[in-house]
Image 1: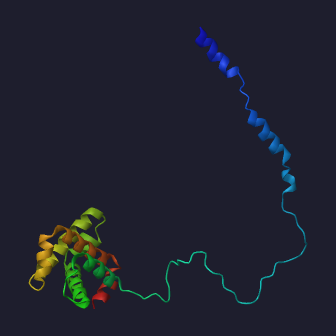
Image 2: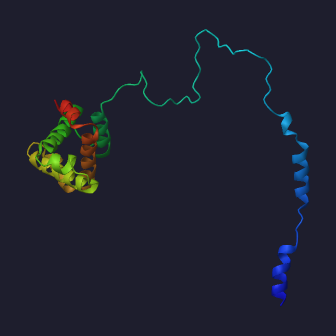
Image 3: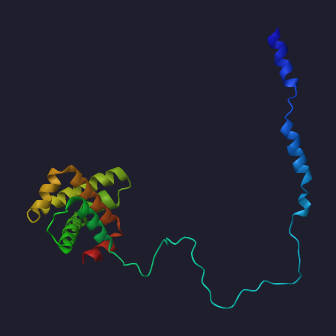
Length: 184
């Protein structure tokens, strides 16, 4: 019985908050009509200074294109990142390394299955698997000339993964026509 009595009694009880009265008084004391936009002058326009001026940027770390920044070839960036990770003691010059990457990429592009299995394939996973297989076939074709590269590719799974990713990034840099121009 007490339960039913309290169930109906508690909603009827009004709890007074002593801070509520102070808040109401504060809101009533502020006259918001006194704070507003007021027109001071009629038919007056704001004129800008005619002299040439320059505003300093808010952030000194500029983003985007800079004229004074040296332009780097995307292939050079891919090769340098790959070399820093795997070929710190490699005696090949950067130009020779560039030729190796381009030769492998050329074999991949020249493969008759490249267009159907990679370029025209809408499925991302199947496209990646097909591209990995085409890179593996290209490495096998170049194994006589690049024996060290082939040995490292066949024996080190991490190297294989990074090499495949580098070739994929190289192929994804632009369209096929632009890449063919890069190859020469």
